Image (cartoon, rainbow, N blue to C red; front, side, top):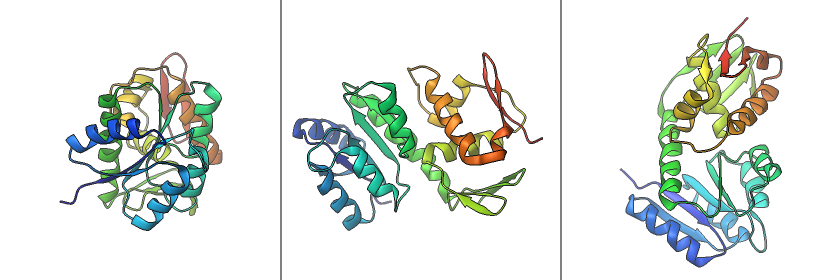
Length: 225
């Protein structure tokens, strides 16, 4: 089996080496870029990048611009690294289709765990499976969602969240359970991560977003009415 290839983008060589060393130990192939322009060039020249770890603050082209450029053509999972902790920056990341958002300083081991979790979930794309619920059609193999026959664009994490909701129709799901199953790692943070993704998912589903019911003080339930 070929090694999975990860693009690490950061203008600090010391940070790139730190992340690279931990990923190589886990048998990932790593390619590096020192700025946003180089990252975009490498991504489109390689055509086989499985995941991107992307710093926000960089010369020439920042992480937001890189993400916008790549998201026009690819749904490759993106983990955004940032020294900023403002909620608006995190929300901007989700708006642009970022799958994970990690603030510096961070534990390299936790970063690798998140990389592995995302890639394990991405492995579901190989399944030839279609889920249907109340006019929503979720094609797991193509990683596509259709609403009444029309394709809608979801981020990687939004797709996985919808997948989990549909599989568990009618079941009351706590935020903790959603994190453990969709994020697939021990998450140390508050519930806003779940709530932000649910809000975005509801908006993209339009009228079908009403299928996602809020259970106050607990979590959510997906129910076709």
